[in-house]
Amino acid sequence: MEENITMLLSSFRKAHLPIIHIKHDSSALTSAFHSSHAGNELEDHAKPLTTNNEPLLHKSVNSAFIGTDLEKRLREQGTLSLVIVGLTTNHCCETTTQMASNLGFDVFFVRDAIATFDRHFEG
Image (tube, rainbow, N blue to C red; front, side, top):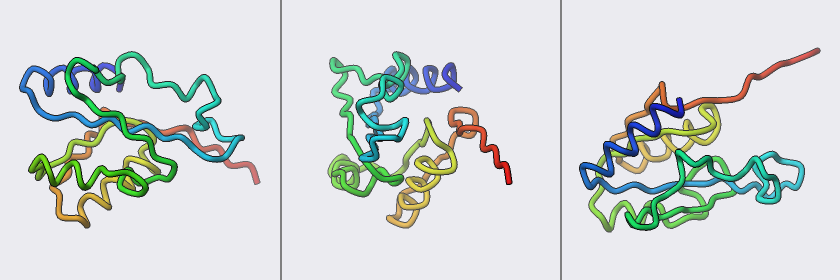
């Protein structure tokens, strides 16, 4: 997954295509996605390039459209299609994809550039 994200970012940068990074910052202190947890930092391969004008938006719910100006940014730059990569497939990526589609964007869900956590149920 990391190699594929790196490759996609590199390709977008070379083609001068817009890139918007989204980071989930949970409001729940016990969440692995709370900003106080070291593991919540973006990995090096996924960090925005400040020299390339790649904004980093922060969200606190599954959809990248809720509580951010993502839709406004996309509309202002004339974006018609989105490419979704990252974590977690069954929460953030899927919810953002569905909402983007509902808002009229064409969405490409890159299956080998997304991942989720193993879900283990005992009961």
